[in-house]
Image 1 (cartoon, chains in turn cyan, orange):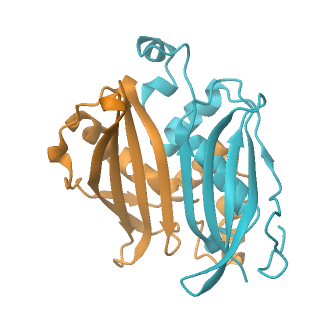
Image 2 (spheres, chains in turn brown, green; image 1 turned 90 degrees about the vertical axis):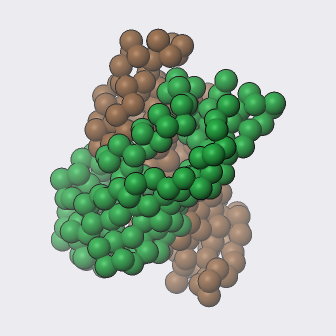
Length: 139
Length: 146
């Protein structure tokens, strides 16, 4: 893990990106069970089609969990103060998501030195599915 | 239209015991390979009492309890029209294996855009542990797309 400190981190620095494999049905089934999101629209093709979708698609919180991995791969989770996501598009089967992050601000927050990180999750076609932000306290 | 009478509605508390096998399953499901999330010794070396719940895990509380689905039914949002618009977490202390987290939520706002074509439901939550300490605050924006 990168030993990032407040003084060594600069605005514009990027986090090591996290490249995910293409979304498949097994991933969606496992996440349904593990996350507690049993909404059948994510695992049952018949249900998805009845809802007007061409196929099952990824749970939004799966994409946010991957962004969480991006953050905790860079700084210990105990330093994570705030984590926000806006879901902008549906992540379809076959989408190989790439999670990226960039330091956009150094600031003091509740008496701690923190960095604000802009987050993004995009597929192999460059379509952004999630944008977000994290606040991480650094030593 | 979603009835605005639900603004201020409090959901029943959802109790989520933080269990080792569930966290290991969650780590597998999201492809997490950092041993801090699967190996208690690695977690202790990193300063946690035991495996920590990953950043988004507490969202499971109201799914497991059924409170999240009951809310959708109460609000009469057809599941096919439902989207998760936004999700936020503010963290106060870790939740680790052995902790029991209770999530209490209320509906803090309901509004619409584009002459009702999009309706939004804002839910705010507090997650506390068995010592009544604040673990996290959460905010969800649900979208009903007509």
